[in-house]
Length: 146
Image (cartoon, rainbow, N blue to C red; front, top):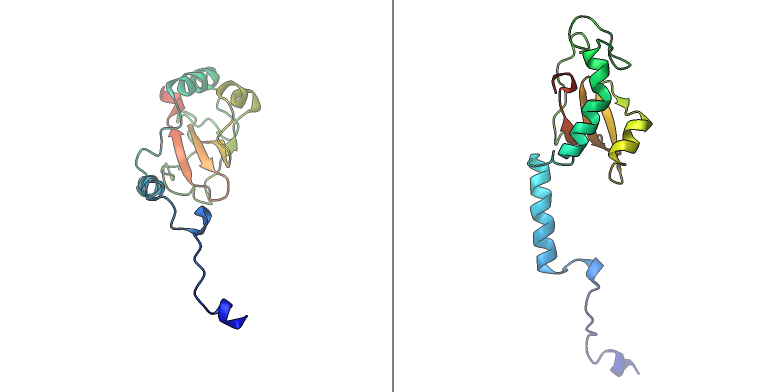
């Protein structure tokens, strides 16, 4: 019996999930990862339709001089005093940046974010961020100037 077991090594193919998968699959995945790391084209989630709907939602508040919650009007176009843009697409949102969830009525109009992401407003910017990391994936900037 021992002779049968020691006669030769067993040969089996690796399952696809064990690595060494299809070269085309690896090639595509690597290409996508490199672009995301560099932040290239990472901001293309928002379409023109998103921009129009979001602008229409906030336009009345900005034009009427009424700032959204969290932005006290200080004759600066609803921008928080001393708050420079502290975020960038492809980078995590800094912990000291104050953000607000988008109103549910607006989310219904633009549709839900992709799984694992959420929409937030930072000052006059709308961002799509990753839930676990806070990575800024896409943005609509300067709502007050649209």
